[in-house]
Length: 114
Length: 109
Image (cartoon, rainbow over all chains, first blue to last red):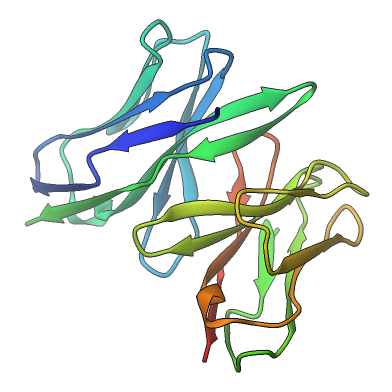
């Protein structure tokens, strides 16, 4: 069935270091993979996404990579800052007929210490 | 342009009481969703609406009902609240990259 696994569940990094979060998905037909950042007391916010025809996408300090063969994708945050502390969710779009819905990973709590 | 608006932001209910959580979007999305978020459980889909006039159950629909009133509005109703429904509820809209509301924090005592 539809499943997205996300690791690690918690990640503590020193300010300035890099952070990497990894996700795997089950449906080889998935073609869209967004990442969300959720700050304390707020709703998840889309920060970056990648489609299956692209292997990597960057936006300033964040990047996503996708390996369709292995069915896994990753979020990379470079030069981490305290404001990067949040819960991050990966997701994969599962489609049935002409419609699809996102399946979310369980989330990663990222703590950036000064 | 507010995106997805949820009301109320906070609510305390007694066991057995009913209430409706409201959600409205101004992004012209066909699809809308209701999630609940509990500590350590991530986001769990309660109900969704692929388009105006249709609704379907998600992973955890028991104890809830929904109404897709029109394209903009998608409400979630708890007919008889239970302590197990204490959670943070998020509404979202979108066909791929969802836009989430800011959430309703519900406590059932």
